[in-house]
Image (cartoon, rainbow, N blue to C red):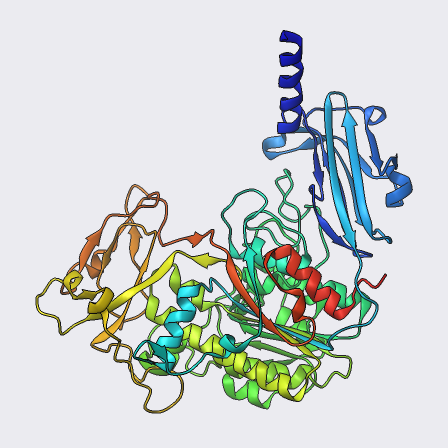
Length: 579
């Protein structure tokens, strides 16, 4: 019996990874047939090359993968600490669909992973794909945007959002390879590559080396399109164009913060349309406001490559040529609430920014000129950027703007039925609408003005000018929106009319505490946080996101799917891995 128990303990230790090598791509990876990827094995010990044995489906790996990997006897970490040995083979391609069982051993280290290589149909289902990504888009954002924009009478919505009419649906899991939690980098990377990855990573498997730029790469959808088609590529966002979501279309880095390097990755792929903020990372360090540490002038380089530069809404409308680079802000662009109503944020400094609708229209006009078709990614970034600081009014107004951009996509679909439209979020927020806040309720304590159940009634937003947005945000009876997680902060129950909300600030101990700028707002209540004191805002939730779609290929979205599964539907729609 003791012998059996000892054997079970040894087996459990091996399975749990106590003596297991690490193999990239990871177990259960899904790989598009013919799509290049990097193969890496990390051993925990220093081993000899002659002790390393790697087979793929029972054959020596060199026979199946087509080349011999580079052997590194002592892979170094920080401060030159030896991490163990490794092998690396870049640019592997597998030409046949099926399961590939990879078995690795060296000394007492063993690891077995299985990859699924999949092909696609031979004939494309659609000529174009428009991929709308609402960053942080949660069910509550949709609900709040619908109530704000369309109104409600006797329990029924007075109108539908554009996203409400999409006829296919799936629930999508967002977790990363190293945690159930998630960020915009690993989530969008899974959508755009078909491979799950770690938090903060884009287009790579996150390995153990200190460099953020040498990790094992996988192909992005933009690269796959360049490799197999003559289609155009467009990237639109109201964030910095180098931010995680737009970057995932082209980028390979362990750290989403490598924004200067990501600009170079955009230049390598050269999407025909690039519209957003983030010009500070395009400018050489000699230019005031630049965030680069070198003298590369990517604005000049893109111009030399045939791009028309637009820096304002007017310039975008007049931009000619087939390729356009629109950079409308040094950082993230302002929200629609600030641009159209409050004139706060940085609107005074950048008064002529286009909105997401303007940019989507310009992108569709340019890309649709390609007879081969296009892939366009449109991100509504400020849904997330305003949900972190719990600035719900700005987040919901931006959800309405995002939905109006979807409306342009649906209009395009009517005239171009060979177009697949996908609408989804990359992750959720812990946000819920619980009722209304009524300023006319008696008393001075704002929490007593929160109406729940029958006391909630209906908010009194109005849209007399018919633009889809409430004519004013500071109505007397408005939505009561709350987050499930937060740092210490002062809840005011009011729209933030003076500029985007900053709920917490750092103290001398480098801890985040409630921002006392809101302490004396009438009725403000201190809320003790439920997050670590290192958190300055609310964080993402692990909840599934809702994906909706319509058009040819949309039948592939159903039930529960991983974000990496969504890529399989996209490439099948375009037939990028024809068998």
